Image (cartoon, rainbow, N blue to C red; front, side, top):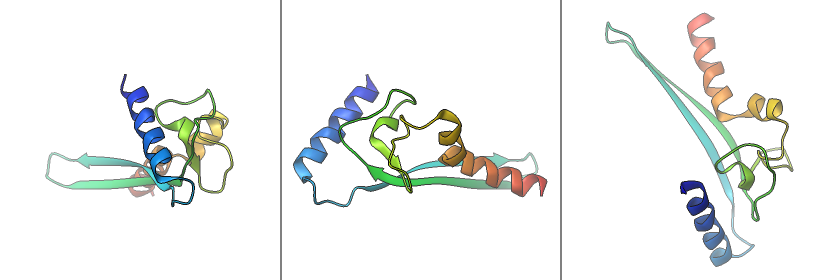
Length: 103
């Protein structure tokens, strides 16, 4: 299971590094569009935050239980799904795409 293996690796790194390490991290989402005439565009969304351990929360998936978004105390897995979506890297990328295409 990739999620379990990834979280085990995070646990190992956190334990090896100790508490006094910068745990800054971010989720990234990149959307790329290509049109038949060769024109293309790329839109990147970012959700900055910090890595936390142990995992917290039952919502979300993947690394959500170990990711605390900037400005929050809850992990993505603890946040209300609507709030998580509002601040997510995917929402940021899609907002940039929509703004560029429909502004």
